[in-house]
Amino acid sequence: MKKTIKKPELLAPAGTLEKLKIAIDYGADAVYIGGQGFGLRTRAGNFSFEEMQEGVAYAERHQAKVYVAANMVTHVDDEKGADEFFKKLAAIGIHGVIVSDPALIEICQEAAPALEVHLSTQASAVNAETLNFWQELGLKRVVLGREVTMEELKAISQNSAVDIEVFVHGAMCISYSGRCVLSNHMSLRDANRGGCSQSCRWKYQLYDLDGAGNRRDFSGPAGEPFSMSAVDLCMLEHLPDLIENGADSLKIEGRMKSIHYVSTVVNVYRKAIDTYLADPAHYQFDPHWLDEIWKVSQRELSTGFYYAEPTAAEQLFGPRRKRPTYTFIGEVLAYDEATKIATIRQRNHFSVGDAIEFYGPQWQTHFMQQVEWMENEDGERIDRAPNPMMLLTMPVTAPVRAGDMIRKKGEPA
Image (cartoon, rainbow, N blue to C red; front, top):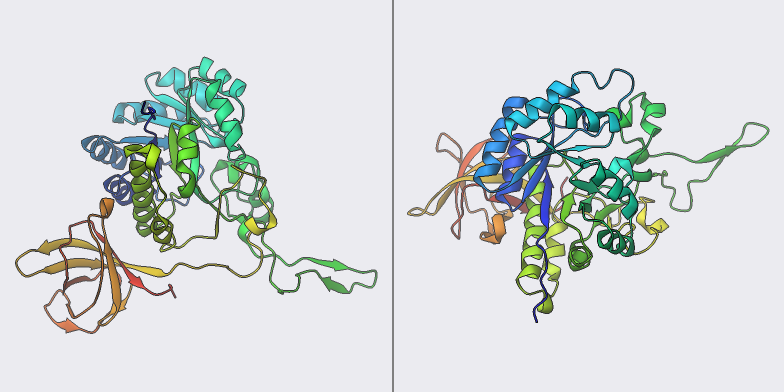
């Protein structure tokens, strides 16, 4: 008898309206965004209400959902205006809000009772009793703390009926469930009210002073400055474990990441999830999927807390151990089947003779070629495209589609 597996939601970050559309085009079932207040990413391209409205309309045309992160910790008077904020989100058609502060949860439930409330990972929910507590208070979903193990996920899902969301890819905060005050002390920016300056990722020197004031350096044999930051999470090779142990939503971190990152990571996870769901009994992980992940800029990768306590190798000590192998250079705007000429918007410089790769949603486009020639908007042949956002035309060796992305072989400068 074939085992019935519930299809999980693939949830992607969207720091801007452009990223929202790209995430959905490349396979996200839902996206999470930030508004102009009450979130934790004040430096992300947060959405105006008008942009939210356009984003929701786009998502619904593609059977996707939009959630808003409103997960700040409120101090005195920080909650002012939250009732009108949540009412507006509900009127726009936002499908849910991600909240950690009980005051904001209560305000949302009173002001916009039709709006789903999801508990943020900042609230450190790591056991079934906690999930049941929040469900009794009307929450529809809980984002587990990133410290949960796979065995704990299994136990939680077996003893709780609330939807469970887990992180599967991206940056991991060095502090417990993101409750950090390093930024407050180091740069006077409150991490839990949207101002994190990522102090844990700065480079520090560790030294001791003797009685005479002489400095003794503890940088280690590599002579590298010390960082407190963790490597990135990647559960691409372990999606069956997450799905079979009860994860209802698989979340990718990174609202401040590039469109290259969002399109690539979403594309790969979509492919892996769909391949598994098509035939769980005979599923095999394709190592090319992980190669694809390494084409975008990120830190080293690990499985975080899912299988064991992280070791020293999963912190950013010493020089970088692996680097991306491609640079994002542009996106396809149009393609002429008769002439086999593509119109592209350039994002980074490249030259005639470079080896470039085209890729698109579900890898319907995926090939490499050399740049034979290219022309600028005036129809002039050029050897190099130096300026970002130039419109160019060039011949391609296989059909492409509007929305396909282009990257260049070779490590970013």
